[in-house]
Length: 396
Ligand code: USQ
Picture 1 (cartoon, helix red, strand yellow):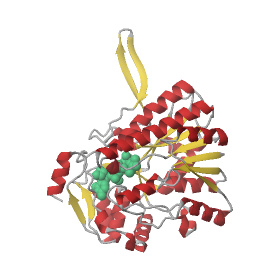
Picture 2: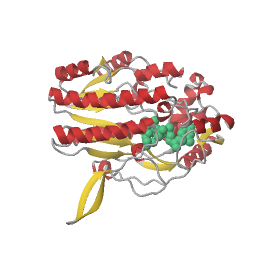
Picture 3: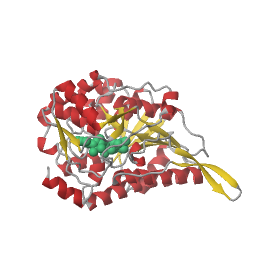
C-alpha cells in the first residue's frame, strides 16, 4: 500500500512509519515539524538525541534499502498544498497523527489553548474535506485518545466507541447506538472529542472510510525498528508538558529525582507499550471499514493502572523515592477504569504488559542520556485553572 503518515516525525508517528516501511509499504511522511519547534519554544529537548527527519530517512535507507519519503507540509494552514499532494499521490491509506498531543501544553495559557484548537481541528477538517474533494477512497486512520471519555469515578466498562441506549417513545421503546458521550479533561482532549463529530459527519455524508483509535498512555521508547541504528532512535520526552507519566517516573528514577505523583496518585489510566501501539495500527490498517460503514472505533490500550501503584512499582524496582505533590490538573482524586479492547484482541494482538525487563530498558536509556536532562524542566507547572495555579505556587 501507499501510506501517508501525517505527523510521522513524532513520538508514535516515527516508529509507525518505520514499522510500515519494514512491512514493505510505500511510506510518505507529511509533517510541519511543529513538535521540534515546540521544543525550541519550551527550551527543552528530547532525552534521546534526534537527527533531522531527512537524516533519519537516509539512515533507514542505508540500513534497509527501503525509502521513506518526507514532505514538509502544514496540514492545518496549507489546505491547497494538502489537496494537491493527495491528488498527486493518491494514497491507499492515510494515518493522521498530526495534532498537538500534550494536555499540559494545551492548558498553559490562552494562546496555547487557541493554538491547540486551531491546529488540531483545522488539520482534521482540512484532511476530511480534501479527501472528499479529490475523490480518494483512502482508509483514514486517526490517532484519538481514551481521554475523550474523561475519568469519572463510576467505573462502568468503556465500550469501543458506541453505547446501546433505549429511549421511551409514544409508540414504545426505541433501541439506538450512539457515540459514547465525551467528557474531556483538557483542551487537548476536547479537540479529540471534536474530531469524533467531524468523522461521524464525513463517514455518514460522504462515505469516507474511517477508523478512530482511542489510545491510552504510551510508555517505552524503542520498537524493533528504532533499535536497529542509533540514529533511528525515537524521541523521548521527560519534561512536565510532554513527558507522559510512566516514562517520566522511569526517567526520574534514572536521575535520582523523586517520582512526581500528582495528588494522591489515585488516578487510574489506560496504558500501552509503544511496540503494541505500532502493531495496533498495522492490525487496524488490515481491517478497513467499507464505504458507508459508520466510523470504526477501537480502544487502543492493553492494561490499566493507578498512578501511585506505578510510582511504587518503579520505586521498588529502582530504589527511587516517591513525592506526593499538589495536582496542577483538575481531575478526580481517585477513579476506577474498566476498558474494553476486544476488537484488537480478536485481530490477534498479544499485549506487552509491564514486564520488568521493558521498564528497566527505559531506565537504562535514560541513564545513557542523563547528561541531556535539565532537572529544572522536570516538574509539571502547567495549571488547569487560575485557582489551581495559585495553590500550586504556594505549595510547590
Ligand atoms: N501524572 C502524575 N505525575 C506526572 C505526570 C502525570 O501524577 O509527573 C498524572 C496526571 O495527573 C494524570 C496521569 O498521570 O492523572 C496521566 O498523565 P499523562 O501526562 O501521562 O497523560 P495525559 O495528559 O492524559 O496525556 C497522554 C498523552 C496524550 C494521550 C493521553 C492518553 O500526552 O497524547 O492522548 O495520554 S489518555 O490518558 O488515555 O487520555
